[in-house]
Length: 196
Length: 196
Image (cartoon, rainbow over all chains, first blue to last red; front, side, top):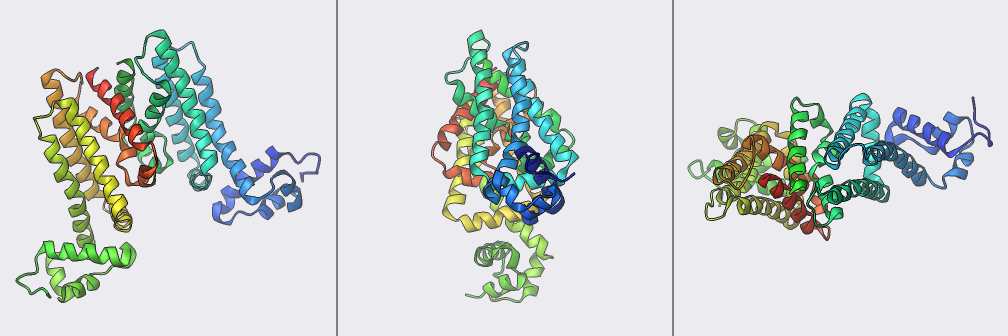
């Protein structure tokens, strides 16, 4: 069903943009393709997103935010003690990335290109994630489980030290046999480091 | 001075190959260019390296081995206690990579392409490096400084957890202000994890 001015929401445009990106790839996808997929003029799309760059940034943010939301639920799960929460948080991040890369490799490759273009969106995303981690580290310090001087610095260190298991540049490694054991070995070392 | 059959050593060919790669880039450099730079026929080059691929692999191995040698000296320095040796080993690795990337970014980019082609050479290199790390971890377990179940697994985890500071894919990050502090924060966490 073509969209009308009333039913054309930002979310509908973003969903159509993802579909167009999946079909045409990041180099060829245009705003006209998105408008055509929705049965509207490209002017209607521009009313929601003022430039093609803004549209690409918004769809990238939407993709990244899905992971942020799933992880926020783990970060807030006070039913787990802080050590288990750190482990579960990274296990959820790694599983989400592997699933995205494995189930739909073309879309994953597309978003990897978009992420490379969207410096600010990505920085915000990393700030959101390390912010969640900082909260978990602080909870561990408060409960006496962790010995850490500066939770924010430590959260960033945790995120950098696990890059092998969430940076899309390593996606090919995630299908290698033994990678889950390697993940566990890195987590064991980091959690021991948090205990201090 | 052009090389003669007597003076044409594998090392001279590899030095010339590096120079040709620096000038032409990895896509355009040919065996004929290398032979011309040495003033010999391309047949003379092929007598030392049977294929272009073999020559590229050998020059990549030479580049990687330079780092391996510097690190071997740190790994063997029993004047440092194991904790300081781990820190010094990674600081040396990070400094070597940053220096290579910063002083001659084109050659660094060239070798990054070659490294991507040379799966086996790179795997051997990583085995060499994690072997050195395993020796340091074992020494720490022997002295009672480290509490580690399996030194080999832990050495691999250390190497993966520090990828941000030695994987060429992150080279652009190494010039960012604050990256040295980030490196220290990761090392602090990992060394605490080794102590256990």
